[in-house]
Image (cartoon, rainbow, N blue to C red):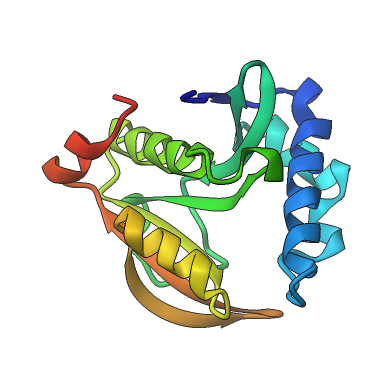
Amino acid sequence: MRPSIRQATARDTDSVVAILREAARWVEASGRVMWRDSELVPARLAADVEAGLIYLAECGGEAAGTVKFQLDDPLFWPDVPAGESAFVHRLAVRRRWAGTGVSHALLDWAVARADSLGKRWLRLDCEASRPRLRAFYENFGFKHHSDREVAPYFVSRYEMEITQATRSQTVFK
């Protein structure tokens, strides 16, 4: 089942929090920290929802995954020209939907959304010490840009240039 993707609303905030906390607990079980607790408080996430930055992937009416999509990122990407990129953060999928293509669908959607906004690049970062996650992004088509310390994180930054070839691979047009 291909998920539908839509902008989260205020009534979705609890679902967004639950998805992100579930993902964080899953990563923490392997001995790593994905996000600090202060990043996952409902009030903070509600502000992102209210700002229109959070999107949900739904499968059969159930919130299966989430992503934050923004048009600037001065914290993790202060060195790129303004206005030419879109940025993805907090991509997470409920464990029940892991391996079903929800992450891929969210990234497809992000590529299509960035393209529709006239952006040349889609950029993201992830914890540098997570080789399986890095491989996932690379297999999707992102290229490693650089590594950067953004306290308390050491991240690998990835980018995808949006080209005609990228556009033709995107499911959501």
